[in-house]
Length: 77
Image (cartoon, rainbow, N blue to C red; front, side, top):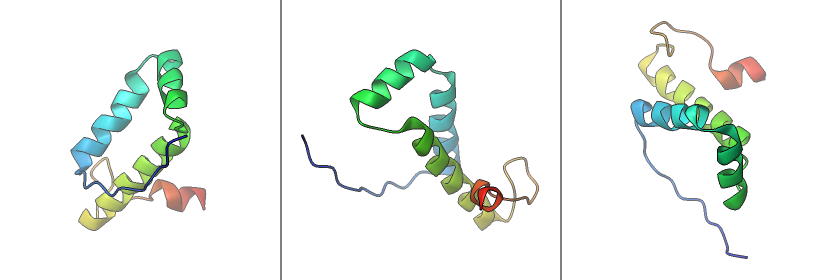
């Protein structure tokens, strides 16, 4: 089994939203098969992306819809 490493990749908010949208717009069965093939928990990945997106919006002091609101991680805590 190959070893895994953590790699930091800088993404802007549009790129994060693109990845989330691609995850949601993909066929769920095919997406699940691809996630399993790569040993990825797609639900956890989406959560991590949404938290990162919320933090990025916090840096701008706005919410995703243009107003300041709670981040996903603030709501779930």
